[in-house]
Length: 208
Ligand SMILES: C[S@@+](CC[C@H](N)C(=O)[O-])C[C@H]1O[C@@H](n2cnc3c(N)ncnc32)[C@H](O)[C@@H]1O
Image 1: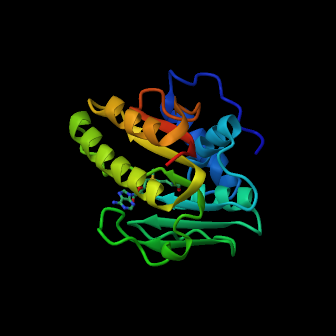
Image 2: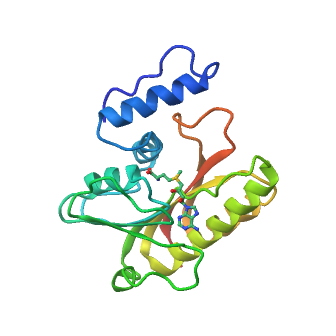
C-alpha cells in the first residue's frame, strides 16, 4: 500500500493526523484508518501470507478483513466476527458474521476450519467508558477470549495478533501469550494515536 506519509505536526495534532488517515483509508476503499495498523504489523512481522485461512475478531467495519482478504488472495479465506454487522462490500474469499465472541458457543462457521487457521487477528475493543482502569479490564477480557479462540483454532505454527489496552494485568497476559508461541513481541504501529493506551501483541508460530 502506498502513500501513507506522515503529515508535519503528527504528535502535536493527533486529531488532524487521525482525520488524514481516515480520509486516506476511504480514498483507498477501506472503511476505517485501522487498516494502516494492520499494514504496519504486516510490513514488520509478515503474519499473513498468500493462501492463508485467517480469523478476524472484532472485524467491523471491515478494514482488516478487506486488507487480509487481499493478502491471502483467491486461494485463501478470511472469516470475521463482530458484534456489529459489516456493511463494507467484501470479496468472495471473505465472510463475516454478527456475533459476540464472549458468548460461550463458538460460531458454527468456524468449526470446519478448527485447527486449520494460519492467523487469528484481534482488533477487538470494548466500548470505552472514559475510565482507563475499567476499559483496560474490559479489553483484557476480550484479549483472553481472543487468545483462547486462537489456541483452539490455529494450526501448528499459526500466528496471533491481539490489540490490548495497557493496564495492570498487561504483563501477565503477555506471559500467557509467550508461553504458547515461539516468538512474541509488543508493537505500537506508527498509525496509532500517540496518546492511546492501545498496543498490539504479535505472536508467531504457535507451539502448543
Ligand atoms: C476498532 S474496531 C475494529 C476495526 C476493524 N479491525 C477494522 O479494521 O475495520 C473494534 C471492534 O471490536 C468489536 N467488539 C467489541 N467487543 C466484541 C465482542 N464481544 N465480540 C465481537 N466483537 C466485539 C466492536 O464491535 C468493534 O467493531
